[in-house]
Image 1 (cartoon, helix red, strand yellow):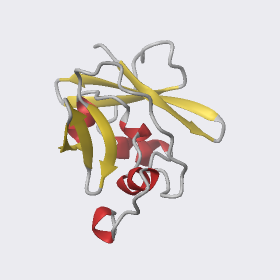
Image 2 (cartoon, rainbow, N blue to C red):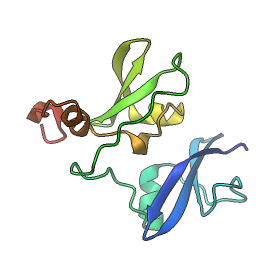
Image 3 (cartoon, rainbow, N blue to C red):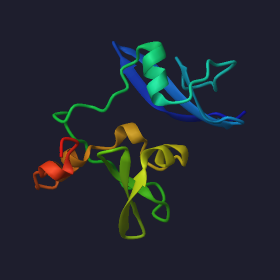
Length: 141
């Protein structure tokens, strides 16, 4: 089984590293305390929500007031890349000059850049572009 490193979550000053792999049941997640070594005999989780429920890690979306950090351009321009998280479990993805929504689970499964947790929310993205989000463009609308 080959694990793919997905990123870290810092909680109370401790880094927890998220890994994914495909097995006979589908997408699997593991959490480790190091990013240097692939998981060895890990406890397998089936979703990010299950990780949060079983471990107590706070993996929820950052608050709307969190500062938005402009991401560098994608490492390969010929590959799709995420623009922002849309309400309802979707991600706005750009590819070859066009943008379109994609289900977040497929975005995560396909390992599209940047990691899902690093994407701004739709309202953060629109605010950073100088346009306030309308109620229909936020989770509440």
